[in-house]
Image (cartoon, rainbow, N blue to C red):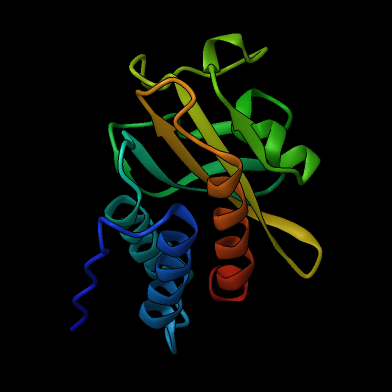
Length: 161
């Protein structure tokens, strides 16, 4: 049994470091990628305040397919290059979006979302998934969040690949 409890007084960098340690601990020795994504999505939800959606889209046959998440029901399939997730997957680059309504082609799965952070997960040089975070707060995500989620994606890539 795991008992993770993030300290509310941590700086964003420290919070992300603890999230990464927790994700590595909970996925250690587990080969099932879906189970690992589910637990990591739950940890993200627990460690990062101000979210209304946290989870994964998996790369399946050249498109993104909904994976484990916490939040309201979501779009099931996203073509590469479409919306924030599809752009991150197609480019292999993190998308930090302060105002989703200003993002060309934004896909509104939840009308309450105002900002978004999407980080590609690469394994053996290929995008295998994206980590998607949404918030009802405008400009919720910072460069520290992007850096922390990029480090998380790199740390868990082999465990969800």
